[in-house]
Length: 343
Image (cartoon, rainbow, N blue to C red; front, side, top):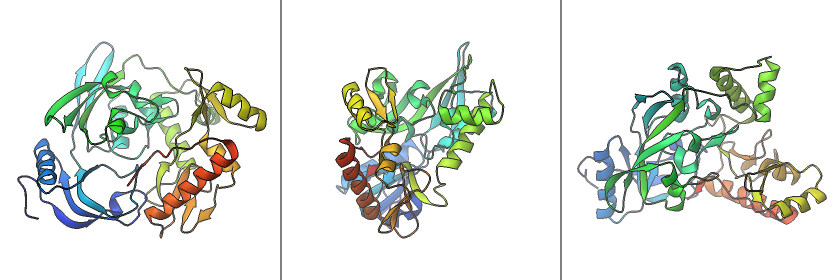
């Protein structure tokens, strides 16, 4: 396939180094996106050649179970800046190809707190709203003011505010309509009147162990990084996509029944009266922590993390995930939903 405007498409391009599970897969066609022009060129190319398309960021929320038969557009569009400072917020804009953790570090270095609880989450800025990333008591939706996206239906750049994004628990309009919007940049509103979010047990314990009573944003960042490194494997060392399953939500009645049957059940009441169950606890109770199925394995320290020790394929990971789902549902009557995109 020849060059098409600003897009040079490569044939049969390996994706193994572009997904954090490190599973082997190939894209029939591959191109990089570093501007609105190259993105539009890629979309035009896919349409002209009748190719399916996939926009790829850091590959940290993706399970490739086969070669991709279409065009993979790798989002590498960089850029970040303070666009406005008000009496209440610092408004920071970052392009979709920026590394998320690097952005968190940079904002703290500038003296703009607010993202520290989301430290060390792998992936890119453009992928963060899709999943509504969250950790240790904070979700992206609480800091995102708006974003720009390319609406592939109209071909126009559009601005979506927080409400437009329809954020939910690991959910958004971008997951509900996965082919419509391609995120270009996000605008974050970081509070000048900052308050520490430190109620999450692991973070509170880490701060207490260091005898930190009233932590700074940097100290919370450091605590989050320490806890995540202790609990979760580094994808650069052991292939994984972080938490593989969402924590399931159940009704108060179902939680009561489960608690009567399993007195150690780990659950957290939600604002709407439902309960969030700890998926890791459910998996652990089924005996899967540290166990393998073929070349795929459940991490020894965190049952929510499925890992590729080196030889697993995406299909192997998926088989392990489905087996865990069946076991949890058989024992607890609870359906586990995967977090990553499975292709």
